[in-house]
Each structure stands twice: as C-alpha cells, then as structure tokens.
Image (cartoon, rainbow, N blue to C red; front, top):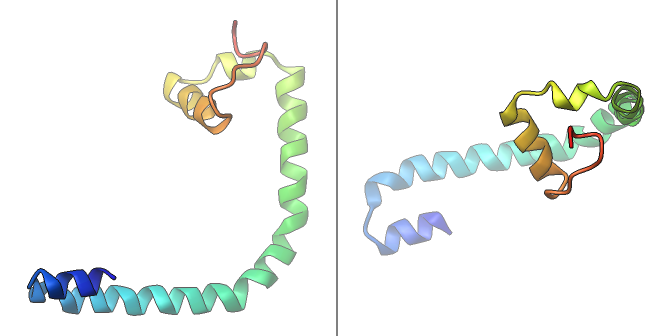
Length: 90
C-alpha cells in the first residue's frame, strides 16, 4: 500500500527502499511462520511459570511497586488499563 501511495505521489526515489523493506518483512513473516510453533512449545512452560513467581513476589512484598521509578510505574498503570490496586502505595 505504501509503495502504491509513493507511486501516486510521484515519490519514486523511495520505492527501492520500500520494496526492500517489504521483501524483508515477507522473509521475516515466513521465518516466524516456520519457527514460531517450536519456539512457543519450548518457551511456554517458562512463560506460564513467570506470572506465578511475579504474583507471589508482589503479594509478599508490598514495597515492590512503591520502590519503582515513576516511569516504570506509569508503564505498569497503562498496561493494567489505568486501574490502581490497593498495594500500589495508596
């Protein structure tokens, strides 16, 4: 779509780079399609364990979230959809 827009806007000097980028994206898509199932199968047990260890740390240590830097805390708030919980230093 971007290549078509560049053609319509007569920005032909950008087209080779856009085509190269498209080719790289298609190659990465093929690689992911071929390798993602095996990667997920290998990493899924570890992924399932991590939230449990994170939850147990945060519930046993209320200072974990209050000692975060403001930028990390803001990121966490956005990730949670802006909801605040009791243990966030209220």
